[in-house]
Image 1 (cartoon, rainbow over the protein chains, first blue to last red):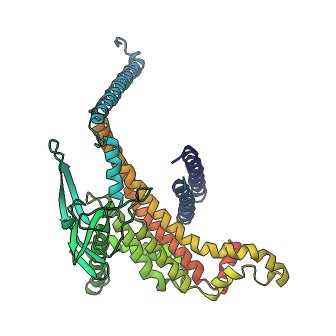
Image 2 (image 1 turned 180 degrees about the vertical axis):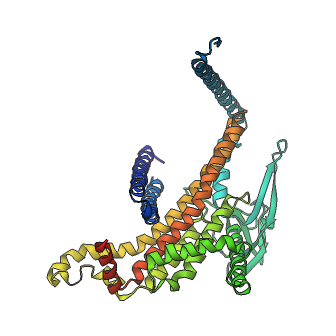
Length: 63
Length: 397
């Protein structure tokens, strides 16, 4: 492992973390606004979070 | 020190007392960690005298790497004799089946955890880093410049730890769900025993995963696969959290096999409209000559997407489970790094919290794998008419 690759992996993880955080926050806002759509919002949130998480892991493995 | 004489001052006073308490604790922690570091340095100095011996950190790293790999024997725990340096392993051996110009079968106990060379029908085999190599009678392993062995590796069909756990999980699933299915017939549509726990989960997968993503008309065809894959992954994830120390879903070969199944099902149940979406996504909305320019870029991306979707599935499951295991084992390894009174409680508290998160992750990863598989099946089985109907629905909302 070289230092640039470690830093790059770290940056990618920061990006993924911000992304997942935004998804979670927005989903909560949406649920607060429309509690009856809880199930649908949660499913969509999990799918989006899983996709971003995949990118984060790919970055860690590349790094 | 502070003394509380007046009732009025009690609030402020208790705050001050809390502050002193925190200060005291942080000083204690500081001293404790310092002494831990000092002890660690001390032992490392002592170790340097003995050439060839490993430091504690290297040993822990090696142990974690070993745990993440599949192994030929089922090791429950082991201990090292402080005086003689001998390691004792407690567990049971598993059968080794290798194909090397003919079948060779023997128990893995013959390897003695990589120390012995095994003779089978005139060939010699040795275990090196949990992998079997063909050697000469003395068991010499030749290395290239990068320290990789150059010996011949026979085809390995052994019942390894992961294979055994998969068989156990398979049998467990068959037994559990057969009894659930039988209790419906016997009891007048009411499940009994453990079936009461599983029925809502099965219904959830049917209603919220299969029907929601695939559609009312076609979900039945995919239900057996979705249910099997969900419970298989979930059970194996949960087995990974037990002290058995198995790591099946954190093995990239296992997740690859699961993802290949998803890919095959998606590809072979794809409707005409699915293929049209890949090779002709713009449809009739654009003249033929104009489409060619766009399709030079678009069609390769769509074809790549067919492979990237299952690839993301396999990487996600593998990476999540491996990361969970590495974090848990590193936290337990803290005990041996600290070597002071802090190590035990700290390691226990942290690993307990992470274990609780891992319980959630075990379920969540199984759910996401099933969910995304259902989503891909939904793409594959959707016909044009249904697609239009869905779009109409969204616009209507």
